[in-house]
Image (cartoon, rainbow, N blue to C red):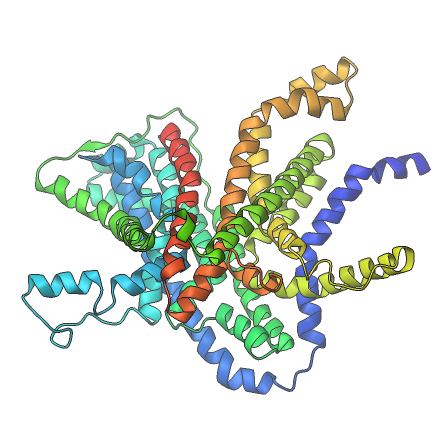
Length: 547
């Protein structure tokens, strides 16, 4: 009995449970802060804060869902069903907006669409108008501007998921529909779209969770969302309880999005019992081809080319050689690379460990643990930061007590006062990316190799070292790159958990834009975008191989 219990509580299993507990600890801490805190201010929040920010958030989510659906699903269908000039370029170019975080997109468009900016100035020159008072586009600051910006930045999530579904649709179904009198458009609405609904739900859910996680773009554009309200309650008003209570509302929205996405996949599954030929793109020429090209190039130009050209222009104006770069920019770049590298190392190692334990033990039980460990990616950065505050205080007090008792070390904040807190937050937030990539790598390693190695006397550690690890090199490389880039771009949790006088490229850009100064901001934004292009290249290659 004791030997069975000892086997059940092996070190690797215990460690996997500890990791899962660390992932859900912020949510439990958040609930504790919200429910046990002072409720005296809740009346003020309920009357003056919650209604406005909830309405803004709801409008933003609905608007972004519409934009990403139209741009993502529309471009996915056009590139899947039709063959026209520049299609091969568009297949990967439509993914490029993924390289630009929403806050950088807003940062760029605030200048691009300024009354004295290049776009409005060019329009006035074409119309022979000299003064902005005679012609002026609507101000981008506001809810409609936020919907426009985030829709452009996030539609690739829908494009990726739906295009994979579209290109795998059997052509036979469309041909059967045509013989029954359906037009090409009717076949698209009544057959293709319903079958692609699960993929559409996945893409929209990812885009909306990124929208909820955003804080920079919303603040730059003057839109008070739940995320911005949480940040203001904690940082500006020093009201942690109020911030936690608003975060609970936001967490409920995230849970609803996850439920909708999961429910859509569960109840809308389709399978073919025959081997059917995939959809065959229809050759389009003439004015119809021009229209399709314009429709597909609009999101690429607006979502990538214009912002990047702006950042390149601003960087060129201010670039006077490496020695002329400000100390803030250099230190922020070093901090960003250091933080992202450390976080990537630990996140990927944890991902490898969790998936390995899942493979070597009871699959059902550890599959559930894998899903729990992946939950952190669904938690917006602001909520994660609030939820980690109490655990960090407990950890700091414990470490301080140990060092005082045994080593007489002076008291200080070891977690909250260093980048350790950010590394932990990044690990929780991006562990799902690591797990997903490693699981994909393990899926290509047949279990028969493990069984053969076991019969030769190899234990589980030797199987991992001599068989799994060499075969997982590419998956580990992809996982490391994706986590590194996401860590470089992270803003919400970084703003709230960074130690004093510690800036990353994202927080530097946020500070410069908040002050209305763009000298270092444009260079910082361009550095983030350049690094962000790397995972887009990987996604483009993956998509091309699937096509």
